[in-house]
Image 1 (cartoon, helix red, strand yellow):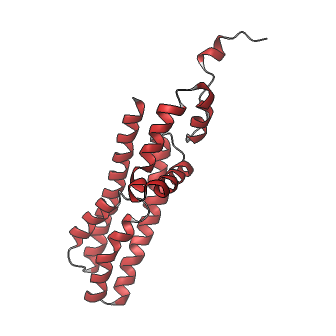
Image 2 (cartoon, rainbow, N blue to C red):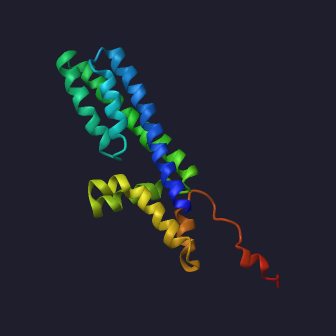
Image 3 (tube, rainbow, N blue to C red):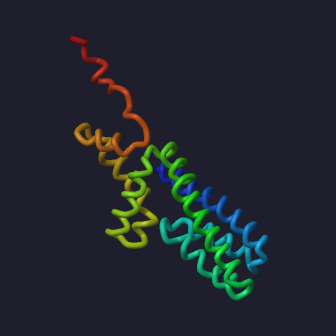
Length: 171
């Protein structure tokens, strides 16, 4: 199945984006003198698999530690770093990779997380994009009447004419 490779791609893209953010977080926290920077970078990576709320959960311990250890200014810098990195990685880098590699538009990625999150709660946030890809590939792509929906969910222009359309003589 093609959707299995797309789900692997989704997990790989999420892992790469989380790794980049985690490494950069370790560097920023280390430069600010925050203890356990490596642990907070690892938390950034792991919790990055939870769209929307994961990085906010990852922010809490280093923010509180920075507040206690270095004061409010450094704590605000830590919070600003998490917000900026979350926005850039979560809303620019990750959707750009996903739209090309998964053939799922960024809009449909967001719709998938919101819809599945509302239906399944936290697991729906994590599994929203893979579930949407599976439905698109297993149900929508396979039926002629619903193929237009699958193409609409894609990130690019629809595919060229199908083999049946090419076989028809021009009038």
